[in-house]
Image 1: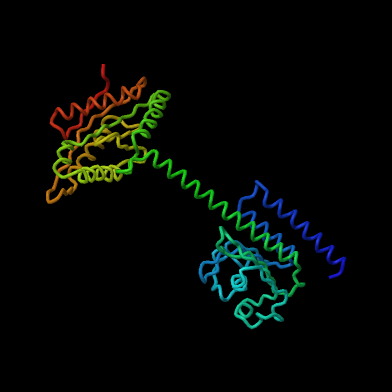
Image 2: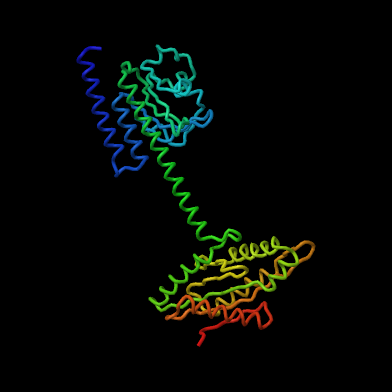
Amino acid sequence: MSTDTHAADQTAAEQALGRLHRITSSRELDFEQRVDAILHLGAEHFGLPIGIFSKIDGETYEIQQAIHPEDGLKPGMSFDLANTYCSHVVAADDVRGFHHVAESEIHSLPCYKNFALEAYLGAPIIVDGVRFGTLNFSSPAPTRPFSGHDIEMVRLFATWVGHEIARRRDLSELETARKELERLATTDPLTGLYNRRYMEECLIKELERAKRYGKSFVIGLLDFDNFKELNDKYGHNTGDAALQLFAKVSAEMMRDTDIIARWGGEEFLILMPETGAAGALKYLQRLTDRVRESDFQAEDDRVELTLSVGLGIAEADDTLDNLVSRADIAMYEAKQAGRNVIKMQRDIS
């Protein structure tokens, strides 16, 4: 290589590195847009008009993103890995380049016969030490021999893509972990319903909304009848199964706006926004009927599960404690009335 050619090659490499830095550091581009910009940068820099970001799963080669002069490649297109030029990158676990395939050692192999690409330059994409796929560029026409700068440049492109995929995975896993911690903090582990802490937060917000807009809402406090006797006779696993049955039935019947929580022990609280007393009574009657009519088996016995329910209607100046106290008093009155009853208290004065 002449001195002038080497200098031009060095200058082109430095310019490409500058463009790569601008692409990868841009906050205005998302991952797909950055990969697209890198594919265009590589196609221009290497003189190879086809650029592909691929994923390799076993023997399947799948296009993730691509640029093509005739728009002939689309994401999701897949090929047998053995029939692609990238199989040589996988075999070498390193960059492979062929500037004139017809005169190379792979001229008789399936990739050349199937695609007839004369020039190819590709690098493996490694994510957390595992091969993800390849970043590759190609052309139907031969090109100049690839320089050391070219080899390092395509390797650098692929390295950035691999690091970015790993970073995105880490962020996704952190978000998943955050959501799981949030779920655990707000969910009762036995029933899968919300827990008391979350319900209290919802009630406070709903009371503030009711005060601001002058809208009422209803809560229902439900308590299993004779639950201690059920546990004593059949064991705590049976009691747990009864609670889980209620959770399943209530989740199936609830409206999108309703919130149901395990309030404590065998008690559940249902928040029914923008619902009047008549609507709440009708809904809770259907719910308790459905639980009672369920085919609940304990050992060899069919057990009828009933609940006593107390309703509380929120007032504009209510507090959380006052509202729940009224529902609790109504529920106690339902117990006194013989159980399997719904009672309502508007105020405690």
